[in-house]
Length: 273
Image 1 (spheres, rainbow, N blue to C red):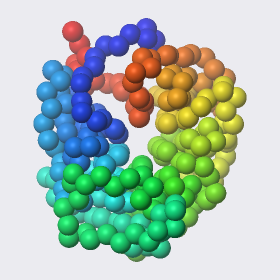
Image 2: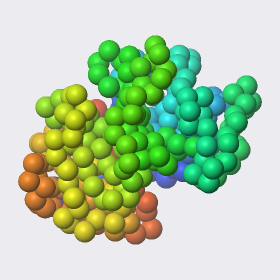
Image 3: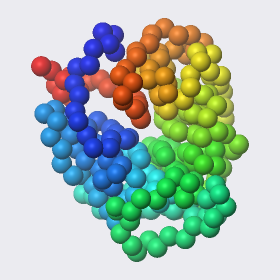
Image 4: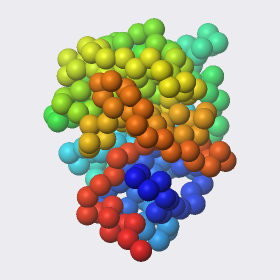
């Protein structure tokens, strides 16, 4: 980031959300309806696949469990380290059964949905990110793109609790510093900082003329990186002042999906030449 030099890159079919774990990237392949690993040499290997995968959008990992948003099916899926499905949550089964155009959605969950192309407007919520609320992994925080909601789901009950409503095209939720959460609102180009009780404590109101905040994260240094996808740039700002301190412009033929602050021995070995 300091030098703005690309130290590693790899070709992938339709990469979306990803994590870095044990010296390899684990990446959602949206149109492949699968999750793959990519090693230092760029070699890909299928890591997760399931009949309920349709446009897998994002993946996170905690306590031996992977959370995958199957966005084409308006679903959140949880897998153990062996690839076994351990939990599933479907928004159409919890009151979100109408698309933005008012059509009722009925899904056959016994069907293999891989390879079927469900249009964005045929989805009811377009769930695009999900993380565990705390270390217990018993509750899930998720962003609903179509309905503009941040939702908390207790896995034992299933019933969604709407934490924030009336927002414009939410795109990502991450854990932040000092027991906070950072939420990207792409439609209004705002960033919301929430405390551990999920109350908004700070809002970034787009003072840097962003056009589509695809993602935003806290760095280890306590600054914030902002992915402004439509302007093909990543901004670094201070917190809580949101003062611009650095900027990186990337190839406008690329489409930014997610940002991670990568550090430590694993990633150092990964990019070593």
